[in-house]
Amino acid sequence: MAAQFGRRLRKGATTTAVAAVAVAALSASQAPGVAPAAGGGDAQSSGATPPSGSSATGNSPYYTDLPPLNSPNKPGASPRLPEVGPAEAGIPATVLAAYKQAEQTVAASDPGCRVPWQLLAAIGKVESGQARGGRVDANGTTFSPILGPVLNGVGFANISDTDNGAYDGDRTHDRAVGPMQFIPSTWATWGQDANSDGRKDPNNIYDAALAAAKYLCAGGRDLSVKEDLDKAILSYNRSREYLRTVLSWFEYYKRGTHEVPDGSGVLPVDRSDGGSTGTGTTTPAVPGATPGPSPSPSNPGGSTGSPKPSPSNPETGTPAPDPSPPTTPAPTPTPPPAATVFGIENAGGGRPTAVAGQDFAVLPKVRAKSRSGQSVVGADLVFEIVGATDARFSGNRTTAVVRTGAGGIAVAPALKAGEKTGDFTVRVTVTGRALPRLDCTATVTPRQADALARTGDKELTAAPASEFADAVEVKATFKGEAAARVAVTATMVTSADDPAENTKGPYFKDAEGKPVRTLTELRTDADGMLVLPKIFSDDESGTFLLRLTTEGGATLTLELKVAAPEAAAPEAPPA
Image 1 (spheres, rainbow, N blue to C red):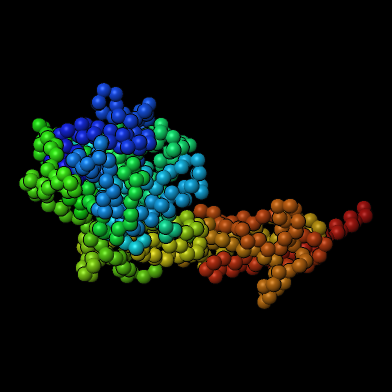
Image 2 (image 1 turned 180 degrees about the horizontal axis):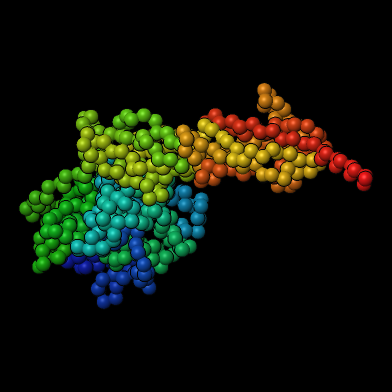
């Protein structure tokens, strides 16, 4: 598409010259922080070089549309100045609110950064066209995921999968995600929950804007300082073309903007890669956006010719219609299955319950459905273990991605109970979507034994104020098999019919050596065996009872006898 002076400038074969004109115009109007390069070449940032390391977006493609300029024939306009037009200057209401909220949040937590919301708006414009012109719901979440091209090394960086497809739906390579286009590995570090919904969602503009603000402030940067500002932008995408494009929009928004309804923002057209996916097709980096023309070897910028000023009315500066033939956009790619999911529901099977240390026989099972209620096959769902539990999916994982199969059904992977008993939650969400989650309650019950038996039959005796010489060893079984790691309670009781704790007679000792007559922290070993701690006697003589109980109903009562040793019989006198 031919660039049009008087309406808007787009990246074409003469990108460098056009960018220089735009930056020079801003510089001439005393826009801070932008200076033309010496000798009329490309504008360079003062002393800033791209720092080493990765970037927020993985250096993914970005939109290169530049702010509109006033007509060169408008009287008194020398040079051309940015025009605050109602279409370009308008930012969708929810998107604008998210940028301003991020600025306020960082102003409170990191006042030295001085991040302006207009910088976030400039990056949002360049990365996703302000979330596809503000196509977000009331909570600020995009109606469908915004995904950049697959970073498979074909025309782009080669970044292997880091999130198991949780954010980008790709378990082989990463893709930039959301209105601020974070790659999953960067989001894992910088992701925020700015709308307090309990999730860090890169497709939510509030979460993404705050994450971008904090990312730009990293390293103690002061964004009111030109050098720090340049470094921050370059850390987002390590391209000087990117730096110049963002700075152009930054200065433009600083001159004035206003709120427009969500969904009515202007979508950008030209992309830094010409819209190429690396396979010879033209596909927008942001699903739903209009793609730009594919570049050719002789026309790397994707322009249809050299930029020429369009005729305009010298009195009003109104541009004439563009005589260039319209470009037929490439077909919008078929959205991934997850993008068609409207909701998820319990698919039955009952409440998952397992004994501590055992596998769950029943697993959470859910169904993905479309807006019309049809089953969605091939959608990736995230199963996540939530709550105070040590239960784990196979591979000792707390999260797993499962793709829906026949009937839109996805079943959680193998799940094993830990030793912590009680309820926990298996939460199910759709990858990259801000849909209502589905929570399944799972329960871990204590290990059980239905029988306890002493391994020896020697009488347990002791003298008053001494200790029992023989240790008490028992074995727990459940349905005839050894009951491993079963909790056992040992209590000195008053009688066989009264399980109340006895306040006199034999006792155990606690860690401080004080007498205790109930122990609750006992547990059988892997073979179901348990040796009780040493038992002591006080001054009381008689027969006392020790009761052992377990989960599952096993009970064993033992007799403890305390008596003074019998006096030895006198020796008979010699005959």
